[in-house]
Length: 132
Length: 132
View 1 (cartoon, chains in turn yellow, purple):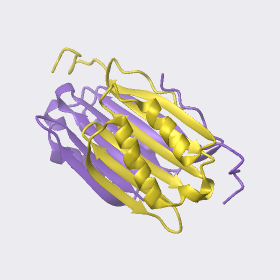
View 2 (cartoon, chains in turn green, cyan):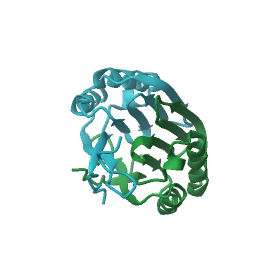
View 3 (spheres, one colour):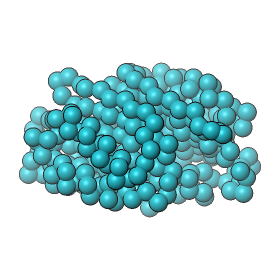
View 4 (spheres, chains in turn red, yellow):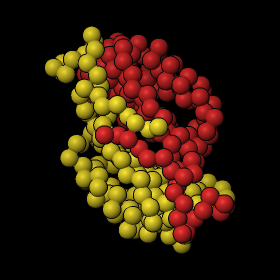
């Protein structure tokens, strides 16, 4: 499961970053997590144009940044020392690996899923890669 | 590329939905796209707790819904008749396929990528599936 086909024309890349065994003293600190997200955005050199956040009861936190380049989201499950991040950027030069490495170090993660998915379109009757 | 490993414990499912060859008269209509996103949320039976949107120049639109269950996002590239959707839900019973079918029909897509990714954590020293 989870094998994403490659489109004919790549317009963005999407990093799936799931971190297990994070530091329990940090992962439940929502202000720290929000700050972490901003640091990650700086490393990725992306432009934030909007933000949403939500504190869940009894625990858990979501923050989503709307970007010029697409979006960056974080969801925490402090009860499992687990955090789930998506960075989708239409800047193909975005340094996703540095973002992942920063998150692993900052959150003290023991294990990480890190996969880059190509996002884009297939050639069809209504669109070819030459159209613009 | 794009093969996402399966975690030991699944806490959510994430649908990657990229639609090519969409109807050019619809895909550039941002109000229609926003309405489409709300319809999709109804079909998925998810709870919206926040929203962000952005109209790009000269064309393109992003809307992101923050959910009780995680998030739902849409990014449009009208110049390519292409639309990119992510639905990440911690309700494992979410009917992702119906959402995809609705989007394909409503937007007149010719080709679709539709992949479900499992999101969750690995067993580590700091967390086992029995911890909660």
